[in-house]
Length: 237
Length: 255
Image (cartoon, rainbow over the protein chains, first blue to last red):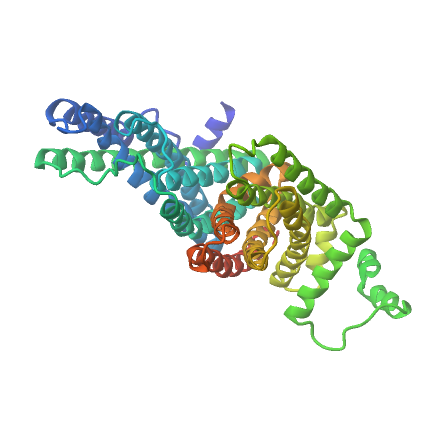
């Protein structure tokens, strides 16, 4: 606890708040979106109630696969250029929150697949892309964990983050090649169900709510990283 | 070269020592990128050739793994042609990782990396030299493993093996570029041997899967056009990652 009081004495670092207002707000928004999805939006006629998982799965995929990985790579690339610790903390926070969202994508996808495809895991291009991206982000986090020197940790993980962005198109190309050669007979290709306006409204609301949650979590994680680094700087001073 | 001179740490004495040694060749012209690359690759391969421990253990690993894979499958249930390409590329991946681990382990052993960084050689040339050394190492393992695969799996000999060799070279270039970079990254950690596979395997996926697919098409006597999409991915991967890893490598070294 001595370190916390030490941080408080520094004007540059504010103490971590007990309750993060943005996180609370985003949790209410997600709760609202899920309530609307479960109670006030009609279920899909063909897919049944399991279709409602779509309102968690797709927003998580957008945020985990595209937003988080892009922030991780661009934050890393800018860090290598500007050597600003804040950029490294942004990349770190986005990667960690993105990993949680990617895990949600894989788990909800498996639940939906078990019900709709009859199998929890099909070797389908999109699943493979998500899985390999999950592996890349996981290895990014493990690399950070394995490096003790903060400067080396920021620099080396930034290299991995930038290369990961180059890898993503190759993963896509490879998995589509894979399917092209091995047609999957059981695939009920989940072509976008023609959504009613109610569904579309709920979906838009869910995307907004989860985006808010994502950035609230990144913000909390960033503040924590700032406090950690400040504490480390004090301990070494 | 000037190895013993660098250890004394005094430039004046270093020059004197260098002049005193008859075998030292003082470069008469400015060091070039390709020349430096070649010298570093030659240094690594010379160490490898004199000890032979790395190559021997990797080659033995590849041969044992081929034998184990062959025995663990029921040949009446699975056609050897369906099995062989996957086996070959899984073995290359892990044999290659064994070789890559040594690449920077050698430099960290006596802090030889510091001397390498102090020498008037660009960081990019260090990377290219290391990658070239690893490429020769991996091609050596492949030269041994591909004929053994044909022998163990009873595959017919034919001109398609030349194309398989070309696929192997194409895949090895991308593999070695990414692998050398991550070997440098991982060598900064205490867990280098354990971390390298985890960092590099997701990046090897767009190398290993198209290479295995192309090998399967070629050995299955299918027209070459069947293998072209996979070869295109391999070639594009080589170009993008050779450039990207060469540019990224200086960031993996301490400033």
